[in-house]
Length: 235
Image (cartoon, rainbow, N blue to C red; front, top):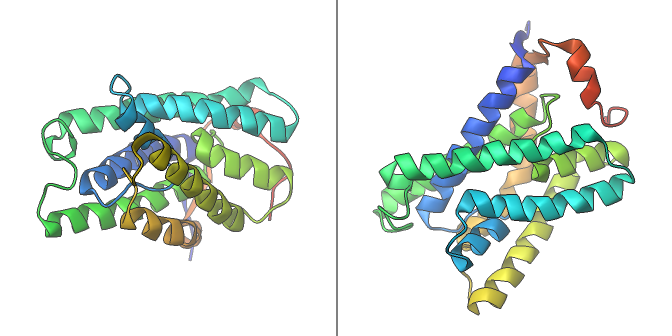
């Protein structure tokens, strides 16, 4: 089957829109957010003047410093991953502001009927994995969470799917520690968090294979794209 050509830059923008919407859906469902965004979500619950998106800036800034230390260098283009974080956080807050069902000030998370909550969670989980798989197929750097996995797996020739699963588990551990530290109970994490921890890496891998069977992503500006190379490609 001949694969369709798709602009990598459009893939990047689509990834930001879909991921931010998916995260807002999962948060509204009230079963617990994904392990990746849980530390930022818990921080936003603890610090009232920080929105969910703004808390993402704080957490991802710390992770970015860890990434640069592991890479053993700092390149100017690395900072574009934080630019992605800024865009993602702004769009996330926008989705939660303009859609009443996703706005915690209008509709308290988890206050809908069980059927609505389940639809929000399942769709949000699937869209999260799909959007991350898209991020991995554009040369423009994804937000720091996914850039960390993409860059470190390439730098040390690690299996990306396995590293993603390990990263998810580590994020869950940090989220649990923050929740207990701030609230002395689980807040922002729950059964949904555990489900996403178990399935997220596998779903991303499955979506990635399905996408690769149908599409090939090519930059509209090849010379510009070459500036974003991290390391030699990881199999």
